[in-house]
Image (cartoon, rainbow, N blue to C red; front, side):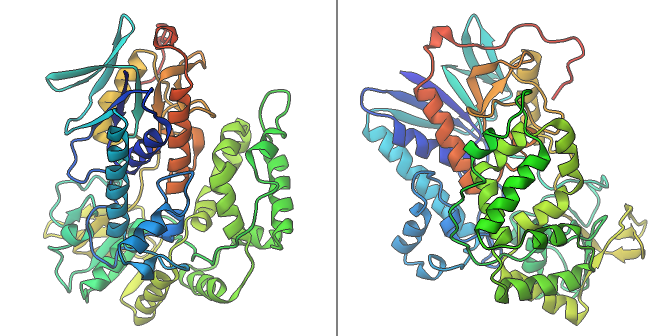
Amino acid sequence: MLELAVIGGGPSAACVLGAVARHIAPEIQVSVTVFDPGPNLWCGRVFQPDGDEVLANVPMAEMSARAWDREHGTRWLLDQGMDEFATGTAVPPRWLVGRYLESSAAQAITDIEALGSRVRVEAKAVRGLAVTEGVMRARGDGWEAGPFDHAVLCLGGSPSYDHYRLSGCPGFVGNPYPLNRSLAGVAEDAAVGVVGSGLTAIDVVMALRARGHRGPISLMSRNGTLPAVRRRPAHHELRHLTVRRVEELRGADGRVGLDDLIGLVRAELVEAGADPGRVAADLACTAPPVERLRNDLNSALHDDDPAWTVLRDAMVACGQDAWHLLRDEDKARVRTAHQALMRNCCPMPPGNARHLLALFDSGQLEVLPGVRSVEPRAGGGFRVGARRDVDVDVVVAASTPADHVPAPEARPLVNSLVVQGMAVPHALGGVRVDRTTSRLTTWRGVPNRRVYALGDLTHGAYLFTFGMPVLAARAEGIVNDIKEGTPRDNVLVGHGEVPADAPAA
């Protein structure tokens, strides 16, 4: 029987179980052990139970946990009588997506066990994977499990980043989700400072609005950039921005140049009837954030240019491969425009944009750019140092870690793999992985045939690691690779020669 460890029990793990259910057969017996000590299995941090106002940022048509069945999520909504969220561009609340992920995982477990295989869920935190004489085991605080033939690391990222080291200060909310719990103690008239201005920060504002908050709200960040507004789907079949076409751009060094990749982008946009100049103008735009939000909403409702919709679809279809193959100097060029790119690739729903504009127009909400410090005051509350200094009563952390480090509880596991030569930290975050299989790679660049990574841990290798289509596709690839892999006694588990100057994860 093939023994598989899935470490982490969030949305990525739900996708892995769906793929296992698809690929196993009565003659392929599998024992899957899912390790996760958290209270909201399959939901992760952002899809746990919360208020109706905390919305997903995409329609359910883009949230399927089954890569081979894009309508899986929308059919589930229809089966639940949630027709209003299953059609058009309607976006469901995050808690409803969590319910779908729970249902998807439960059905996958039922299907796996119906074929004679089994699934166990262990409410334990894995602190290390150890390989001794070819036998791999998972270890925690005072326990050990295994042996396992393969492990899939589905570790989530760190919660919102405590950039100003305010943990433990009265009035500081370090992890906003679930918002109906984290904001319960915020007084209606309190001045609230939200660190960040991205999608998590928008969730915080929407939750405060739903609670009837009357106090001022400041979105505090270094540059004050707000997400764009989601446009209608384009329904364009990609012809140029595909993995095959990207691979054809590889030079003698096996890498792809950014200028050649931009050529594919231009060709795809022209094919779709979009204006490439519009994309360039959006990336270079420096208009004030509220003015830009107003323009974005107007364009989303009345402008049919499909440019960003096409590029978002391409990001899912080939963006990970394109990033993996880019030359290092070109990755540095992309990272200079990373925030502008992500702003447009990860937009907010139009409904949230309308509510934000109403709050801005009323004067209750402001964007506070140029933030350089947030310090607790002796008498309570916080002083925010920015282009215009302000005092707030409550600070909510709603920004992601700049370096995409693993969550604190996952770091011992990652460090154990690095020490054994089974994983290598990526210079841009996470660990190095093989492009086509998602296997961890060793210091010699050899794929480890026993350990795979999925989700935030692959940030440096893939850049764009979130979104259910990406997770589902990678999960499908991982399970298929395990199914077709080499015999257990022929696998690689590291090379045993870790350089003396190898950094810890």
